[in-house]
Length: 293
Image (cartoon, rainbow, N blue to C red; front, side, top):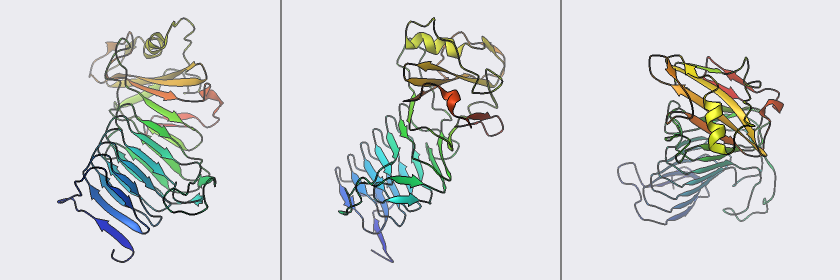
């Protein structure tokens, strides 16, 4: 440990053992490549690089940067602290099937204190979750839990995070929970992105004719039967107690028909919120290619 920082491994020589458990009482700088590692950072701000699959990473209230390139990782922000967090965390997670959560309650798991159950509020900083950089989307079938925000923002990048299948196949999607004001989705999958209605709130698709979710995907993706070249269109629909956002994408330079969900489209499952129009600030920003909740 040097200057209050615990450094383990390097980019050239990462810790390669599988199943490591690391608990840092100070700021942590870690390079690891094994599978199944468990990492508890410190509250001063961590820089963690974990390239193996199945990592479990928890960081606290500092200005953290987590790069997790493997699949099926669990990354939690805020479990090592309590009360208010005012600094931003950046998470680069390009693998598939990850679970990434901005905590709503503290636990005493790593620090052995009495903070368990304390509510956590994110009051500042522009946190981001992407697939390696602000221009690369997260991996397929990731689950994101947003935090409780009173200031700052939490952004998830979905550039290139596409279905990989039509509605007849195994559709990859992103699942969101605890969605609220100042949560942001960046799409940026074509040069022009817009909504099927005048605003995103009124771009709800009537899917009463859909016998199943696959049929609902098709109805939402074909709200505009023909898409101009380099154009994507967003809309949404209700499904039980949840809602789904669909972006129909035509990445080709020429206009093309869009009769249903395509392999280059994007699907976002919003868990626990059926009517997106109830979010008073929800809007799609065509300049930044961002949906702001």
